[in-house]
Length: 369
Ligand SMILES: *Cc1c(COP(=O)(O)O)cnc(C)c1O
Image (cartoon, rainbow, N blue to C red; front, side, top):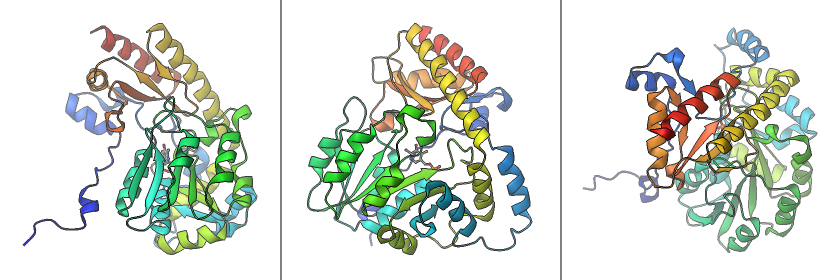
């Protein structure tokens, strides 16, 4: 009898490697939790907005009941914000859920999914999870090479994942390039445009992806409340697409995939313009703080449009792991990216000015050792 359960494509999955939790690092390295700085998961350094906390407390009173399976109020708020009908919106348990649902809804085993080298790890997982073939297109300057991705689409391809800005590299694709891509993609190929970091874009880089959704029935835009809105622990994301795609997403998603507290908090956060503005200002200042320090240390980095920076901490293939360990010993958690094929690099999330300063001091020390 075979001791292997499940299909071969499931056994072949390499599980997602998350940033180390603070408590785990404290235990492992004998440190005080309060002294640890975590800049590893692109979380919001301001934490949960006060507006969302209030909404959650109110929602807690109703937790004996199931959540609204259709997320009426949250969808209404999103529909208003993005000027689309509410039935063009799919809510997700984080946008990871959206990416998974999309793979299940649009791709079958043996078909193919196109995504870029050094793009978000969940694209590979979602592809593998449905037993589809991976078409990984080599990156160009650590970002997406859209003409090459277009050329890579074959007769079996049903889905393309694009992250803009991209994680873990922070690269950005200008609107004109995306539009040129959308114009040429075959109509039977779904394009998932993952905009997890959209809110961090400077005004001159912002573009209207929902206008494209109205124009292209094969486009799905994915967003999250985990980064700019400070709700990573609650797990809320959403997709905007025309009914042809949204109807299928709805059949695949679990009926209660977004809990009541998360729905309430997301509405509050969505309307909290002050919180978003504070986060954007802190991010821009922190980016400058980091990149000035990296330049002073002679470190190469990839110019970032998100709330994190990919920085090269050495020339040998063990550099990322070595510097990561040296940082952990000093109570600073960042993200090694060897699993992305970037073993000389670390991805560092932008924190509060004081947290950034701790990272810079610890990195300086680690590099000198
Ligand atoms: C963080 C991230 C997400 C989503 O995270 P959720 O918490 O699941 O919403 C999606 N795409 C990219 C590229 C990300 O970096």
